[in-house]
Length: 289
Image (tube, rainbow, N blue to C red; front, side, top):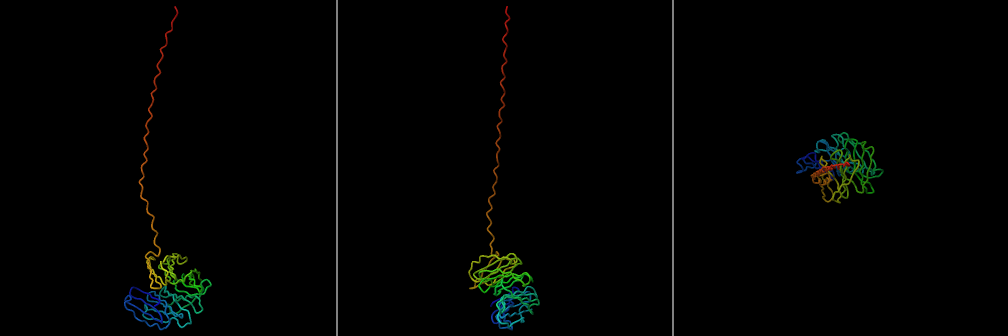
């Protein structure tokens, strides 16, 4: 299986090779085969309410209006290309991302729940390649992850619905994308790479994953703190702090009680009482006889 989406704790849909679609209504205890009407490998699935879309090989797209109980074909039968990324933004608006048959990254948009599609091929800053995942914050601002043919990874961002893209390159393929909030996003890729953005995907910084496995998908709770990443070899990574532990606070210095300053009392200088000068008794004057 290549993709899975749970609508709620009970209802979920998984898709895989040869047009396989499985559906559960009891939290995964029992899975039922659902007819897809195609034999192409199915790579991605996404829902918004009861409406869902599925992307597959040969540019196949399916859509559902009943929580995945049945599926209709939006398009199929193309030569080459495919859509490993899908996102249902609203009940009617959805996106798929992948590659066309001439090795261009490509994003498809639906505004009628998946029945019809408009496609915009583009380049990763002039480079051929393919998109692996897609996430739109609204009808205009969105991101795709992918790789170019020299082996580099790419994250491309649009603010005009896909007409123009700006691309950042990395030394490993970038695969899964997720935005638990409009500001906070995560991307994962080969070599244990995990990237985080806090500005709607404009700039990205590396996080320490502790793994060298190729990582394929990421999912976070709405608090942007609790998340899970999955990768090759059964690797499952988990975080409860958004992948970035809070810095250890510096210890608060103990409160110092100031010692009161004692002002010494002044010893008064004794007042000196002057010694009176004795009066001189005049010698009597002798009168001659």
